[in-house]
Image (cartoon, rainbow, N blue to C red; front, top):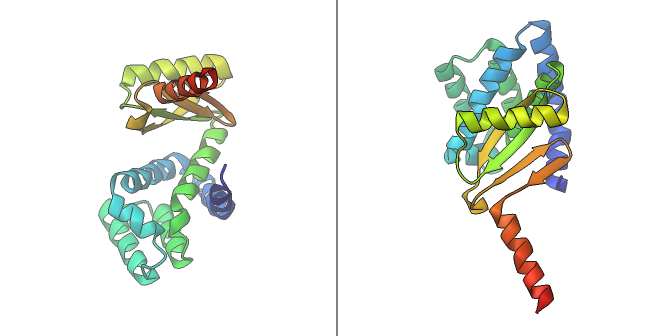
Length: 186
């Protein structure tokens, strides 16, 4: 984990814990998680929104206005809406993706699941995801929830991260290793 990610995780954890505790108390963990995943999809798919959250030069009032518009349009549960407003009011929207990840980790742990981050060169089919989840469950002994990312630079193969373990079967890594080995031989 990089120093920046460590700092973000340190800021994110108390927010995620507070939201999780409230969601548990209201028996709304799954609906809160689904709403947060929707926000996460928006962050990933809309570069302008992602840049807005991360930008230190955009005024807090502007960011709060955008959050209010999203809350209204998405008809988010009140708990999630209030959480987003609080994060915006505290000028912590740049940490929102880390907060969502931390919440999802807590929810998965509560269900007795592990989370795996899977990065592939192209989107995986439902069957591929199901098969991968079965393999990981047999290796880990727990149900594994997959978070998928696409990185075309991998060329082929997968990178799977489960906790502190990483399995890198990407073609990019194999080619890099071959290149290094060839330099050592010559």
